[in-house]
Length: 171
Image 1 (tube, one colour):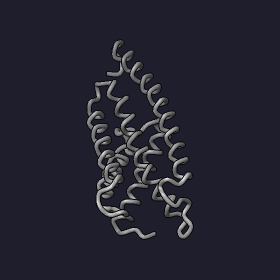
Image 2 (cartoon, rainbow, N blue to C red):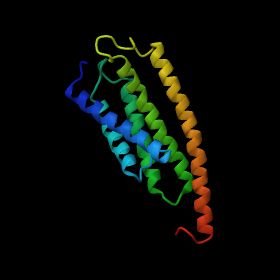
Image 3 (tube, one colour):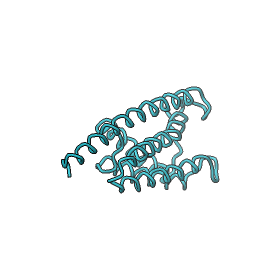
Image 4 (cartoon, rainbow, N blue to C red):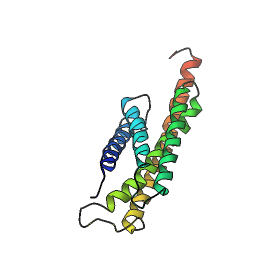
């Protein structure tokens, strides 16, 4: 597959990040930084994004590096917002940023996987191959649907926490 040692490490940590995000979505309907899976997602995504800066198939700074820097920015802002526990509206933005960071992480993941697997006869010949474009469109639709579900669930959580504090409960 032509991966360097850094590329192998990057790939393994990236898979851990994606699996922890999927676990979070299944268990909590979001990537929850207060949970173990959320913490694993945050740190594994940070490491994956940083190691991506040392990898370049085309040589030099490229779009993948921009994605990595943007993902670092997104998860950093989400982490900052997660620390602001009393601001209920911050949860909406935190949820969106973490989900969006996952979506952006999946763009190079899909591209690299489909252009390398199966070895010798990859599914796609390049990033503009229809199977890659269609897969990314499906993931984008899942992202939109998931974001709507997260918004609705977060609204219910915020309302319930508001009612509990009004009545002196949950403090």
